[in-house]
Length: 403
Image 1 (tube, one colour):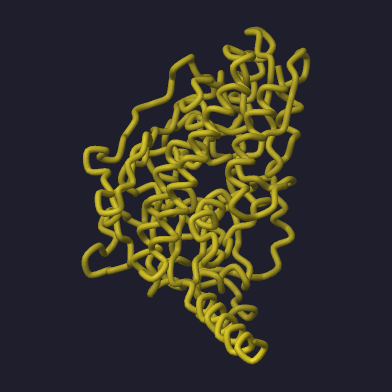
Image 2 (tube, helix red, strand yellow):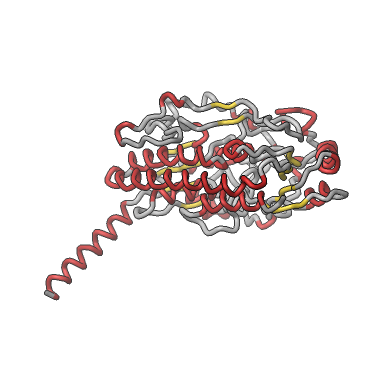
């Protein structure tokens, strides 16, 4: 008996080692996307995170280890350049041979336009784009679901530059303040020369503690005076991950891409995605119940990042201190928001851990409004499959507790 067990144990160990070795190398841009990918990859492998959850994705310099995650990746999942235009060159350069999926461009994704101004009316959520729901099918895998499903083959961003050539992305339009930090011809790349990473300076970026970031690169730009000119991140609000409906759609997109790269584990990927979509339904029900007692409460957010959450749960904000790209607001915008807080019965002003709370203190001055910290990135949560649902749950709990 013992002589039979040894070969069997050895075979199992070898098979287990092979499965781990064969798992694709995957990189995800932000922690919530990383969490969705981790959920779909459960039992097969784990993705790498590119941008730490404690940093703002709007402004960041990659460290060498984070750049290496892109360089080693077989697949990359990111929101897209609308959220992180500064990351586009790194993805193009370091992940040139990887299958790259921009989730904002995936079939079935609900998109909202940026909102204008500092103050919002009850249903001022901009135009919606539903990403061709009529094509959102996964008949081969029988993944019918209450949410809009993503078409498996849609928007395959495997960097076939002969077909795409980035015609839709005139990089000159993205010559914004974020790119000013990444002048590729002038940066010192001594730390990361081995990665051929001309797109980024990878010096220690402790100075980019975004809890204290003063956004100097935005100084002098009165975004309110220029409407959407301040939104260098594209026409659509890129914070689409804050909609659990979108997250449910992306689970199938992620499973399809992983399955194409790793067919042997396709069954696991799609089974995990199906389970995760059911969990997303339960999460939506739970969060709706958390918010129900304070429905109709009036709140101001730190930056205009929450309309996807607001729309999913019918709980609109009354305004935002900063724009959707979290740039420093003008004095006029601060005064406008402060006036609404003081004069129009605003009950709550939300801060965020990624940014300096000083602006929230300024807006609260002279009012009786409460404040709470809401985290759209899960900065204090453990990375992994549980981060996304816990982040959404925590956001709802923080908002409800602020009234």
